[in-house]
Length: 239
Image (cartoon, rainbow, N blue to C red):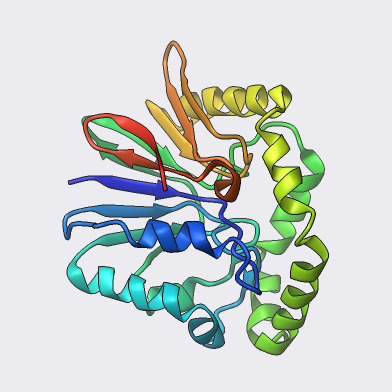
């Protein structure tokens, strides 16, 4: 049995960044394995609209195959893909909106997107509370529709196509982000009383062993091309 973890692929509406996710889904998973998607798998997926299943048919078809085979598949909603509980649950995915703890190899492991434990960044926390709020969930369900989200997605894909890879790739050189998230993981290890923290969000790939905790992050996957595999050890492996 193995656990597979990935986050922050940011598949765009025009399928930019889709190749890393397709490579991940091609892994020869076993029925007893578990998969953890830790948010921002898609660059814009808001609201449980059925049309997503057609647009990203290659994703949902494979997920349904894996779920039918017996795999447990977890999906923590990020800050780019949220209010999608009903959509994902139909495909056999266990959807999480908050950090949660699993026991792996006798250790307590915290899985989260990363923005929940991030220190500082007060303005972002206000924004996160707004976009994840119940009123906005109602708006996405009863006022917004798929066509509106698609127009936004088309616009954002066109605007950011030539910018994001360079910007996110450079994140790996940012020691401030690295140190902030290591400190965030340390604090989370105490507040959640866990041994290991696994998250994304920072776009900084890291495998850190502190005195009292461990912290793993796949980074911005289109740049790092890595996922995390957990057996008797934790390994960041190439796609």
